[in-house]
Length: 435
Ligand code: URA
Image (cartoon, rainbow, N blue to C red):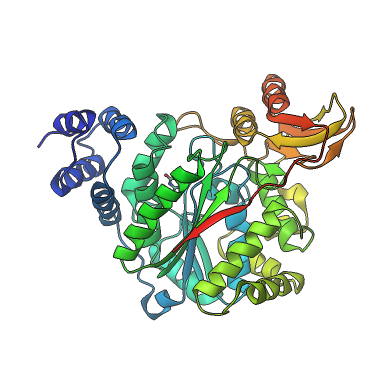
């Protein structure tokens, strides 16, 4: 078998056999397939797609490229959550300590930023000292000890995803259903949890642009998960506007901390975290209905337990948990620029993709595999959709380390805002739940 024949077959839209997919992943792992060949294959998959059977083979080959965490008897109680990626999406960071504080153990394998979207790993690494490179043993013992661990995909866990993910990020091949499905589900299988909750996003800031595409992606992932005996639910949510107000690594962690402190109780971040936490508790049969699960979740936040769990998590993974009480411990930026409104009216839309491009060029994401992230940069939305502004009000604040990049980011953000004279309709947060 030769890699070039596999690329040719996919270029012509043929269905790969299990042997071909195994050969491709083995060649990726042992280095006999060059990055440019794998990239060409990824682009062929992007255009030609993959059948559900091929996607299941690919997922399985990616899981087998590394080890699987064995949580033993604990696996049945443990949950893992994953988002398919959004802009300003810090729900993993708000949700994971919250669920752990509710008594649900969480073992989570996350990714870095992908395409225009931010990654949980990059966000957490903005906390000085925070180590996401946990060994399998460290991950297991931390879940047993404090009920929560968040690790990055590593050489041992789904390493094939690590390699494909890094290539997709820089070759415009992220937004492909089979590639997303295999990437997400392989990590969820490797994390060892029996319970999985997926937040599948659609909209301008997501890889799936329409609810229909998100439904199709969810159906594939739920199907593969069930085949592998996982208790899996996909929640399909809107990503037309950045989630919350902060976009950029440390800015998003600060917003997540504010939520865990109980200072953010309304709006998309709060609503989505409450909803997904409540759904998880119902999925685990801790509660029989969403409303009582939600009341419990809110109590856990107001009691301070969720915040304390986050502190415990940061401490356990070597981070400086003083950031919780003192935001000046996060990486600093040289410039802050307040972008003003030129008109009176309601903000009717903030295009997530445009804000994401602005952030990426400030340095919050990578253009090349080897790029370093600038953890402090980003955009803070002082105004969100549905809020009234007067000419001269600050619409958003740009955090930057480069004056020229600030100017270009402002241009993107200017284009992201749309206004109307009347109050716009509210956004639907959860479109559908697929089990
Ligand atoms: N999250 C992942 O882990 N992989 C993808 O491909 C997209 C989102």
